[in-house]
Image (cartoon, rainbow, N blue to C red):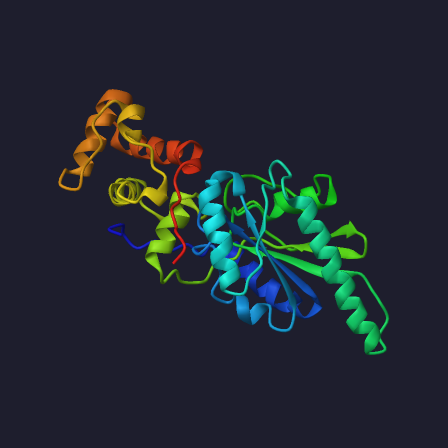
Length: 288
Protein backbone atom coordinates (compact mmCIF):
# COMPACT_ATOMS: atom_id res chain seq x y z
CA UNK A 1 0.00 0.00 0.00
CA UNK A 2 1.12 3.55 -0.67
CA UNK A 3 -0.11 5.05 2.62
CA UNK A 4 2.32 6.74 5.03
CA UNK A 5 3.34 4.51 7.94
CA UNK A 6 0.36 3.60 10.13
CA UNK A 7 1.11 3.15 13.83
CA UNK A 8 -1.17 3.38 16.86
CA UNK A 9 -0.29 2.39 20.41
CA UNK A 10 -1.95 4.88 22.78
CA UNK A 11 -1.15 4.95 26.47
CA UNK A 12 -4.36 3.24 27.60
CA UNK A 13 -3.57 0.21 25.41
CA UNK A 14 -0.01 -0.04 26.71
CA UNK A 15 -1.35 0.16 30.27
CA UNK A 16 -4.07 -2.41 29.55
CA UNK A 17 -1.57 -4.87 28.11
CA UNK A 18 0.51 -4.67 31.30
CA UNK A 19 -2.63 -5.34 33.38
CA UNK A 20 -3.59 -8.16 31.05
CA UNK A 21 -0.21 -9.86 31.43
CA UNK A 22 -0.59 -9.73 35.22
CA UNK A 23 -4.04 -11.37 35.06
CA UNK A 24 -3.26 -14.13 32.55
CA UNK A 25 -2.31 -16.62 35.27
CA UNK A 26 -5.85 -16.29 36.71
CA UNK A 27 -7.50 -17.14 33.37
CA UNK A 28 -8.64 -20.64 32.31
CA UNK A 29 -10.24 -19.86 28.95
CA UNK A 30 -9.45 -17.27 26.27
CA UNK A 31 -12.33 -16.11 24.06
CA UNK A 32 -10.57 -14.43 21.17
CA UNK A 33 -12.75 -12.07 19.11
CA UNK A 34 -11.85 -11.11 15.53
CA UNK A 35 -13.49 -8.95 12.89
CA UNK A 36 -15.08 -11.04 10.09
CA UNK A 37 -14.15 -8.35 7.57
CA UNK A 38 -10.44 -8.72 8.34
CA UNK A 39 -9.88 -11.95 10.31
CA UNK A 40 -6.13 -12.03 9.61
CA UNK A 41 -5.43 -8.37 10.37
CA UNK A 42 -7.20 -8.74 13.74
CA UNK A 43 -5.07 -11.68 14.88
CA UNK A 44 -2.62 -10.58 17.60
CA UNK A 45 0.97 -11.85 17.12
CA UNK A 46 1.29 -12.57 20.87
CA UNK A 47 -1.86 -14.70 20.98
CA UNK A 48 -0.14 -18.10 21.09
CA UNK A 49 2.02 -16.99 24.01
CA UNK A 50 -1.01 -15.67 25.89
CA UNK A 51 -3.16 -18.78 25.41
CA UNK A 52 -0.42 -21.30 26.16
CA UNK A 53 -1.91 -24.06 28.31
CA UNK A 54 -5.41 -22.53 28.22
CA UNK A 55 -8.53 -23.45 26.31
CA UNK A 56 -9.22 -21.18 23.35
CA UNK A 57 -12.44 -20.22 21.58
CA UNK A 58 -12.06 -18.34 18.29
CA UNK A 59 -15.06 -16.01 17.81
CA UNK A 60 -15.46 -14.14 14.53
CA UNK A 61 -17.83 -11.22 14.98
CA UNK A 62 -19.75 -9.18 12.36
CA UNK A 63 -20.65 -12.21 10.30
CA UNK A 64 -23.37 -10.04 8.73
CA UNK A 65 -20.76 -7.79 7.13
CA UNK A 66 -19.35 -10.36 4.71
CA UNK A 67 -21.05 -12.53 2.13
CA UNK A 68 -22.13 -16.10 2.84
CA UNK A 69 -19.62 -17.25 0.21
CA UNK A 70 -16.76 -15.44 1.95
CA UNK A 71 -17.81 -16.82 5.34
CA UNK A 72 -17.91 -20.36 3.94
CA UNK A 73 -14.42 -19.95 2.43
CA UNK A 74 -13.01 -18.58 5.67
CA UNK A 75 -14.67 -21.30 7.74
CA UNK A 76 -13.09 -23.97 5.58
CA UNK A 77 -9.71 -22.22 5.74
CA UNK A 78 -9.74 -21.98 9.53
CA UNK A 79 -10.75 -25.61 9.94
CA UNK A 80 -7.95 -26.69 7.59
CA UNK A 81 -5.61 -24.75 9.89
CA UNK A 82 -6.86 -26.51 13.05
CA UNK A 83 -9.27 -23.81 14.26
CA UNK A 84 -13.01 -24.15 14.84
CA UNK A 85 -14.45 -20.66 14.45
CA UNK A 86 -17.66 -19.50 16.10
CA UNK A 87 -19.41 -16.94 13.89
CA UNK A 88 -21.65 -14.28 15.40
CA UNK A 89 -23.20 -10.86 15.10
CA UNK A 90 -22.91 -9.48 18.62
CA UNK A 91 -25.02 -6.46 17.72
CA UNK A 92 -28.10 -8.56 16.83
CA UNK A 93 -27.27 -11.60 18.97
CA UNK A 94 -26.95 -14.07 16.07
CA UNK A 95 -24.69 -16.98 17.04
CA UNK A 96 -24.15 -15.75 20.62
CA UNK A 97 -26.11 -18.60 22.24
CA UNK A 98 -23.82 -21.13 20.56
CA UNK A 99 -20.77 -19.27 21.89
CA UNK A 100 -22.28 -19.27 25.38
CA UNK A 101 -22.89 -23.03 25.19
CA UNK A 102 -19.36 -23.66 23.90
CA UNK A 103 -17.94 -21.57 26.80
CA UNK A 104 -19.97 -23.52 29.36
CA UNK A 105 -18.82 -26.85 27.85
CA UNK A 106 -15.22 -25.64 27.99
CA UNK A 107 -15.74 -24.71 31.64
CA UNK A 108 -17.16 -28.13 32.48
CA UNK A 109 -14.17 -29.76 30.78
CA UNK A 110 -11.76 -27.61 32.80
CA UNK A 111 -13.49 -28.47 36.09
CA UNK A 112 -13.50 -32.17 35.25
CA UNK A 113 -9.75 -31.96 34.75
CA UNK A 114 -9.40 -30.12 38.07
CA UNK A 115 -11.47 -32.83 39.79
CA UNK A 116 -9.27 -35.59 38.33
CA UNK A 117 -6.31 -33.85 39.98
CA UNK A 118 -8.05 -33.75 43.36
CA UNK A 119 -8.93 -30.05 43.07
CA UNK A 120 -12.32 -28.46 43.81
CA UNK A 121 -14.58 -27.08 41.09
CA UNK A 122 -14.81 -23.30 40.89
CA UNK A 123 -16.20 -20.66 38.50
CA UNK A 124 -14.21 -20.66 35.28
CA UNK A 125 -12.41 -17.43 34.46
CA UNK A 126 -12.64 -16.48 30.79
CA UNK A 127 -10.81 -13.60 29.14
CA UNK A 128 -12.32 -11.83 26.13
CA UNK A 129 -9.38 -10.77 24.00
CA UNK A 130 -9.06 -8.93 20.72
CA UNK A 131 -8.12 -5.78 18.83
CA UNK A 132 -9.96 -2.51 19.52
CA UNK A 133 -13.46 -2.23 18.03
CA UNK A 134 -13.93 -5.90 17.13
CA UNK A 135 -17.04 -6.15 19.35
CA UNK A 136 -15.77 -7.71 22.60
CA UNK A 137 -17.92 -5.57 24.89
CA UNK A 138 -21.01 -6.03 22.71
CA UNK A 139 -20.46 -9.80 22.90
CA UNK A 140 -20.16 -9.69 26.72
CA UNK A 141 -23.40 -7.71 27.00
CA UNK A 142 -25.14 -10.34 24.86
CA UNK A 143 -23.65 -13.22 26.85
CA UNK A 144 -24.86 -11.83 30.18
CA UNK A 145 -28.12 -10.53 28.60
CA UNK A 146 -27.80 -7.00 29.90
CA UNK A 147 -25.60 -3.96 29.39
CA UNK A 148 -22.82 -4.39 31.89
CA UNK A 149 -19.97 -2.80 29.90
CA UNK A 150 -19.81 0.18 27.57
CA UNK A 151 -20.02 -0.73 23.90
CA UNK A 152 -19.66 1.39 20.74
CA UNK A 153 -18.40 0.91 17.19
CA UNK A 154 -15.24 2.90 17.67
CA UNK A 155 -11.81 2.05 19.00
CA UNK A 156 -10.84 2.79 22.59
CA UNK A 157 -14.17 2.63 24.49
CA UNK A 158 -13.03 -0.01 27.02
CA UNK A 159 -10.03 1.36 28.91
CA UNK A 160 -9.62 -0.92 31.95
CA UNK A 161 -10.04 -4.57 32.90
CA UNK A 162 -13.30 -5.59 34.55
CA UNK A 163 -14.68 -8.93 35.78
CA UNK A 164 -18.30 -9.72 34.88
CA UNK A 165 -20.35 -12.63 36.25
CA UNK A 166 -21.92 -14.52 33.33
CA UNK A 167 -23.55 -17.23 35.42
CA UNK A 168 -23.50 -21.01 35.01
CA UNK A 169 -20.05 -21.15 36.57
CA UNK A 170 -18.39 -18.64 34.25
CA UNK A 171 -16.80 -15.26 34.97
CA UNK A 172 -15.72 -13.01 32.09
CA UNK A 173 -12.83 -10.57 32.08
CA UNK A 174 -13.53 -7.66 29.73
CA UNK A 175 -10.22 -6.21 28.58
CA UNK A 176 -9.49 -3.16 26.42
CA UNK A 177 -8.55 -3.87 22.84
CA UNK A 178 -4.89 -4.77 22.52
CA UNK A 179 -2.57 -4.04 19.62
CA UNK A 180 1.08 -4.96 19.09
CA UNK A 181 3.37 -2.03 19.98
CA UNK A 182 4.43 -1.90 16.35
CA UNK A 183 2.32 -2.68 13.27
CA UNK A 184 4.93 -4.33 11.07
CA UNK A 185 2.41 -5.55 8.49
CA UNK A 186 1.31 -2.29 6.90
CA UNK A 187 -1.25 -3.95 4.64
CA UNK A 188 -2.95 -5.28 7.78
CA UNK A 189 -2.64 -1.81 9.36
CA UNK A 190 -4.34 -0.32 6.29
CA UNK A 191 -7.21 -2.81 6.70
CA UNK A 192 -7.51 -1.84 10.38
CA UNK A 193 -7.72 1.82 9.38
CA UNK A 194 -10.32 1.12 6.69
CA UNK A 195 -12.50 -0.79 9.15
CA UNK A 196 -12.09 1.88 11.85
CA UNK A 197 -10.42 -0.65 14.15
CA UNK A 198 -7.66 1.79 15.15
CA UNK A 199 -7.83 5.45 16.13
CA UNK A 200 -7.99 8.05 13.37
CA UNK A 201 -4.89 9.74 14.81
CA UNK A 202 -2.89 6.77 13.47
CA UNK A 203 -3.35 7.56 9.80
CA UNK A 204 -3.72 10.21 7.11
CA UNK A 205 -7.38 10.17 6.00
CA UNK A 206 -6.68 11.32 2.42
CA UNK A 207 -3.84 8.81 2.00
CA UNK A 208 -5.99 5.93 3.26
CA UNK A 209 -8.86 6.99 0.96
CA UNK A 210 -6.48 7.03 -2.03
CA UNK A 211 -5.18 3.57 -1.11
CA UNK A 212 -8.79 2.42 -0.81
CA UNK A 213 -9.42 3.51 -4.42
CA UNK A 214 -6.25 1.72 -5.50
CA UNK A 215 -7.39 -1.42 -3.67
CA UNK A 216 -10.83 -1.25 -5.29
CA UNK A 217 -9.18 -1.15 -8.70
CA UNK A 218 -7.38 -4.41 -7.85
CA UNK A 219 -10.32 -6.15 -6.17
CA UNK A 220 -12.80 -5.39 -8.94
CA UNK A 221 -10.92 -7.93 -11.10
CA UNK A 222 -11.49 -10.68 -8.51
CA UNK A 223 -14.97 -12.16 -8.68
CA UNK A 224 -14.63 -13.54 -5.15
CA UNK A 225 -14.25 -9.99 -3.77
CA UNK A 226 -17.91 -9.39 -4.63
CA UNK A 227 -17.72 -5.78 -5.86
CA UNK A 228 -20.86 -4.83 -7.83
CA UNK A 229 -20.14 -3.36 -11.26
CA UNK A 230 -19.96 0.46 -11.28
CA UNK A 231 -20.27 0.74 -7.47
CA UNK A 232 -18.38 4.02 -7.07
CA UNK A 233 -19.78 5.59 -10.22
CA UNK A 234 -23.36 4.88 -9.13
CA UNK A 235 -22.68 6.29 -5.68
CA UNK A 236 -20.83 9.48 -6.64
CA UNK A 237 -21.82 10.14 -10.25
CA UNK A 238 -18.33 10.07 -11.77
CA UNK A 239 -16.60 7.25 -13.68
CA UNK A 240 -14.71 4.77 -11.54
CA UNK A 241 -10.97 5.67 -11.31
CA UNK A 242 -9.01 3.15 -13.36
CA UNK A 243 -5.48 1.83 -12.87
CA UNK A 244 -4.03 4.49 -15.16
CA UNK A 245 -6.00 7.45 -13.82
CA UNK A 246 -4.98 9.87 -11.09
CA UNK A 247 -7.05 8.89 -8.08
CA UNK A 248 -6.46 12.18 -6.27
CA UNK A 249 -7.93 14.02 -9.26
CA UNK A 250 -10.97 11.75 -8.97
CA UNK A 251 -11.37 12.67 -5.28
CA UNK A 252 -11.00 16.36 -6.22
CA UNK A 253 -13.67 16.03 -8.90
CA UNK A 254 -16.06 14.23 -6.56
CA UNK A 255 -15.30 16.78 -3.80
CA UNK A 256 -16.26 19.61 -6.15
CA UNK A 257 -19.58 17.91 -6.72
CA UNK A 258 -20.40 16.81 -3.17
CA UNK A 259 -18.39 18.80 -0.58
CA UNK A 260 -17.73 22.21 -2.20
CA UNK A 261 -14.20 21.20 -3.14
CA UNK A 262 -13.11 20.06 0.35
CA UNK A 263 -10.97 17.01 -0.46
CA UNK A 264 -10.35 16.09 3.18
CA UNK A 265 -14.06 16.04 3.93
CA UNK A 266 -14.67 14.05 0.74
CA UNK A 267 -11.99 11.52 1.69
CA UNK A 268 -13.61 11.13 5.12
CA UNK A 269 -17.03 10.73 3.51
CA UNK A 270 -15.65 8.07 1.19
CA UNK A 271 -14.27 6.09 4.15
CA UNK A 272 -17.48 6.57 6.16
CA UNK A 273 -19.57 5.40 3.19
CA UNK A 274 -17.29 2.41 2.79
CA UNK A 275 -17.70 1.47 6.44
CA UNK A 276 -21.48 1.89 6.46
CA UNK A 277 -22.46 0.64 3.01
CA UNK A 278 -19.76 -0.87 0.82
CA UNK A 279 -18.22 -3.05 3.52
CA UNK A 280 -21.17 -5.42 3.56
CA UNK A 281 -20.48 -6.12 -0.11
CA UNK A 282 -16.70 -6.49 -0.24
CA UNK A 283 -14.33 -9.05 1.27
CA UNK A 284 -11.14 -7.15 2.12
CA UNK A 285 -9.23 -10.31 2.92
CA UNK A 286 -9.53 -13.59 1.11
CA UNK A 287 -8.31 -16.96 2.48
CA UNK A 288 -4.61 -17.41 1.73
